[in-house]
Length: 124
Image 1 (cartoon, rainbow, N blue to C red):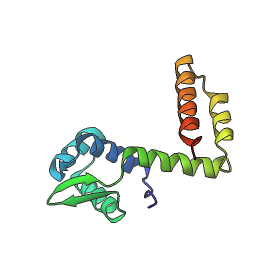
Image 2 (image 1 turned 90 degrees about the vertical axis):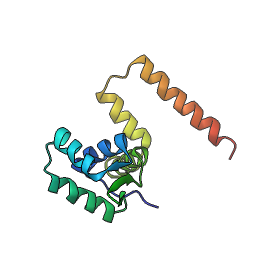
Image 3 (image 1 turned 60 degrees about the vertical axis):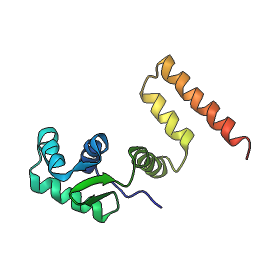
C-alpha cells in the first residue's frame, strides 16, 4: 500500500498525534490550539480529511494513526529523490553533503547504516 501524501501543516498535526495517540479528539483539539494556534474547526477538518485519505482513524472520538512517522518520512524522501535527483540516492547524498557539514559522529552513523544494509542484503 502506498503511503498517503501528507502536506506540511498536516505533518505538524501528525507529529502531535503520533506523540499522544491514541487520543480523544477533544484533547487533540486542545493540543492543536496550544501548539499550532488552530481553531477547533480547523483541527476537526484536518482529522476528517486525513481519515478520508487513510492516514488516521477516528472511532468513538478516539483518534489513532494508520501510518507511522517513519513511513511518512520514507515516502517524502523517496518522492524527493525521484523528483529532484532522477531517483539517484548517490546524487542526493552528494548534494546533501556538499551543502551541509557532517560531524564525525554522523559519518560513523551513516557508515554503520550502510554496513548493516550491506550485511542484510548480502544473503539474498
